[in-house]
Each structure stands twice: as C-alpha cells, then as structure tokens.
Image (cartoon, rainbow, N blue to C red):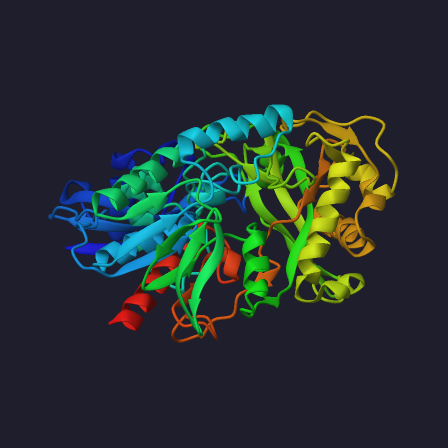
Length: 517
C-alpha cells in the first residue's frame, strides 16, 4: 500500500529516514514497523515562523517496497538519414539534440565556443586580465551560459512541458538526485561541466555530431526554405531543418536574420544591477536567527513590486555565490551571478532589474527593430567606461545610492576583477535609477535590513532576457515565414532559464519530427 501525505521535518532530521518513518506513522496512526519506506517527492523550507522547518510531500510505503523515482532514458544510435542542424549548444540545443536522437533523427550541433575544459582558459582570462574572447566566455561555449553560471533549475514554466523529465535527464548524466525533490533545485557550477560533458558523450555515442569553434555566419536558403548554414564564412552544413538555439547574447544572429530579410521583432526585457549582501545578513533576515542551522542551506529570496507602472524584481538570486563578468565583447561590462553546489561563499547576490520597453528606448528609434538591443548595448558601454575598463565594475553602497551620494568606501566583494566607487544614481538612465531607488525602500519593508550599509550595487545586469523575438507559428513552432527554421529557447524569446529552454528544445524537436514525417 502507498499513501501520499505531507509531513513537517525539523532541519536536524532532514536526512534521518528513521525519523521520517516515525513522523509518517504518527500522522497515519500506523505502527512504524509496518512502514517499509518514506520517499520524499518534494521538499521545501518554510521559514515563516521563528524556527524554520522543512515541509515535505512524501510517499509512504506500507508493507511494500518503494519504486525508484529515477528512470533513465535508453538513448539508442540513430539509424535514419534525416538530419537537423542545431545552432548553439546551450540547454535548448542540447535537449533538442537528445530528443531528436530519441526520435531517430541525427542532430548536428554547431557551437561557436569551445568545449567545457578548453573554455576554462577564456574564463580565467576575463576574470584575471579583463580579456574577452567574443566566441568563448561565460555566455558562449559548450552548455551555454548555464554551464559556468550556476545551474539553477527552478522554473514557473510547469505548464510548458515535463519538468521532471528534464530533471531526470540531468540526473542520468551525473547531476545529484536531490534536484528531483528540491523545490528550488540547483546543480552548481562545479558539477555542471561534468554533466554537460556526459550529455555530449551521449549525443556522440548515438551518432550525433558536435562542431566547436563553429560560428554560423550565413544561411543557405532556397526561396522561403532554409536548407543549411555556413560556418566561419566558408564551410557548409546541410540539413532537413535548422534549430536556432543561440541564446540571447548572440547579437550577430539577430543582425544576420535582419540582413537576410527574415522577420524579427523587438520585445520588452529588463535591466539594472547586481545587488550583493553578506550571506550572513540574508540568513538572519530569512531565518530569523543570528546563526543559521547547519542543516539549512544558504537562504535565498525573491522580491518584486510595481513602481511607476514599471516592474522591478530580483532575478537569478545566488545564495552563497559570486558575481562574474559575462561580457561577450571587449567594450562592454555585463554582470551575472553563480554558485557552486555547496553555496558556501560569504556573499549573496542577485540581479535587481527594472522592466524596459519601447517608451524607454525612444531615443534609439533610428535603429528600428534593434532599438532595444542598442539601448542594452549603450548601458553596457557606459558601465565599461565608468569602471575604468578591464572589466572593473562601477559600484555604490545601497544606502548611498538611495541618498544619491558617492560612496567614500565600498564593502568587500566577490567580484574578482574588482570594483570602483561610482555614482550609479547618475550613470544609470533615470527610469532604471528611479525604479531601483524606490523599490529598495519597498523591499526593505518586506525584508527588514535589505537596505543595508553592508550591501552594494554593481553595474550592469542587462542580459535578463532577449531584446529580440524571432516570431514563430504557435502550432508548428516554425518561423512565420521561413520553412524549416525553428527559433528556439531564450535567444528566440521563448524561454527564461535552463529548464524552460530545455523544454522548448524538446518541443522544437517534436515539431521537427512532425514536419519531416
């Protein structure tokens, strides 16, 4: 017999399976000896009261053995002649490739960056020397932006597809099984490279192709149908369809689409800063205690409000994490955040961003469909020049930002290239600066102590989502004008994170199978 119930577990007993049986037996009025196993389906932390607890949805097995929650997929070598070009090897591209293999279709992945191991040298160069390789950085390379920037798997996109299937595939390729049950699953930047490498091995073992250092520079078209792509200005790759899964930082793809008269359109997005606190302070606020229980993880937060008809919200919150340079060109400064699996850094950081739309980039209207993208680039250039170049970030204490005064000193930071005191209240556009200043006061009422002398803002956080959408048919998922072209994932404007991008990759693979057959 199996029963599904919810139980409350004190932090010190979260790994104690015998205690779980006792709690379940008491709730079901059973003899603990009759319970063979208590299997956690989902767990989350409830910190609303003074003493935080875990709330867990569990399956209680009475006089029977539990079934395994993890069920690997049997990927088999592709035998057919159909092949699909996938541009980009982020989560959308990788999961599209794995799904195509399941469907018996050969994927050919073209990735402008390098494999995870070789890519490390370029990450070291930008961290230590401020040198940006435009084709291999935190955004471009095997696994995409997620590989070396955290691997947070929390998503609200539960209606878009099978989230558990995506998590299951991650576990199959080496991720920890806890991601299957945690309310806010997280793999960690130290573990993700091995997971991504394992996915690569599955794709290659099953007959797929992966080409690194292969930047798409043109499309091969026949009337209104795409038949392939040109890489590095010379080499041709032909296929039955093309998936564009390039991520939202691949601006050259947007320009190429426009040049080839393939429709793209601007869309709203959000920009702002990274806010950094001592993790200890966030723990004290969230857990109502001067000292965090060792069985509780570094605490996180999610904040949102409306200010003057603008949405302001926290984004990509990294408890126990660090801030990293995510530029893709040498004349821009872009920030992101990451955490390793232990989340044991003394710092907490999050994007803090304000929504922007055509009313905000009106001064850029001469750029047409690229007005929002140029507005994004403008803020990245200003941050770069203000920081003194070399990826040094302009920064300001939160309290000084609110009071509109320059910080005479700055707290310590996790950002390795370094920071310089700067008047962000003047540097940032008024619509963003005003929204941030007003929201900080609102957020301090929600989390007393958030607006702290110990906290600081670093600029600029600009890559929350794509400023461009590549329009596609809602039913076929094919581009509205180009037969055989499937815009996919974050860069196309149809996802907002690792899991939603992975789901979209699988959906595009299914759509291609239907299109070809």
